[in-house]
Image (cartoon, rainbow, N blue to C red):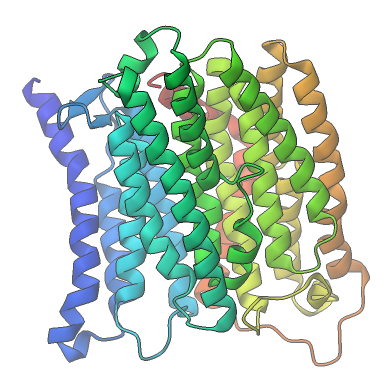
Length: 470
């Protein structure tokens, strides 16, 4: 490795190391200096902004670190920038309305930063062992964050998430063990060159796919999503919907591209079909806004799986899709945060008359709903268009037809939100909190879903450059 690559690798690794240092600082420093108590959010946000400054243009090569455990490339730089940006907005929402108990210390920000550290490690993992360790580093803090308010809905969400997550982790490690019995080298590059897998290895791949499908929330591994999104603090629901899904998507793509045909491809085909159909149909019956967004998240996981069948062009669409979907999701959950009064968040009817009482808030929420539905010229339309067109060009017309039909079905429940805001009278005494920092997040995300649609080419160019390194 020459001096230039060494300098880049050192600079890139400084970001995650600083994130880990900031996590322990938020947890421990206020214990010794009482004057710093209550400032952990500012410390965490400052650290994330500094970490973002470490994201530099990556050289056009792949740098292997720790004997191939981590792979630094333009793809890793793109995904890390995406993750840290999402994290900054989640911390802003947490400053607006602290999700933890008033008597808690810095454990919330410690857990949030450690979860982000696990996520960036997962995105850059070079082998399945590293991916599993990163998955656990991501998951364990999230179990605690789901119940950090210690309310009944939150504790129920944390318990369900932990039990199902433990089951998913057990499936994953069993799959890795079976695969390792026939493949001593579990690096993704080595698996690509291994040829047709033996039956034992094939069983291992199936179990690994099931484990990461749980984190991505593909049906039938989505059971945790509605209850956890509803019971967890809204900021954590937004983080799980916007960023955590991306880690599972990256690993599933690495496995998907190993197989050009065969039962694994058929498994992904059925996962995509069942996910888009079940999630959209189940979303039709939801009245809780957070549960509706949960099923929307599951449906979009299905659309991402459809994009896999577009090959390299499809994965370019996936990398464009992730930030576009994240903006709409963060923005929608930010509106929920402004409106919520109870532990489980508002129902759709709580938005009645919002266009009259808070027109800017209603307009932003409508933009998020239309982007998630895929209405032009918003960014969500182009994300679906690029994903579906890539799959069609690869000969998967039937799969895309199912996705398009179910995307049309989704218009109904997204429009329910807009109809409530613009066509129903406001309830007597209906109010919402003063936006504050949430206002900045909502405006930024609304501008993002509009500009990333109208000017989609720059984002798609970045995504295409990153996709070449997978």
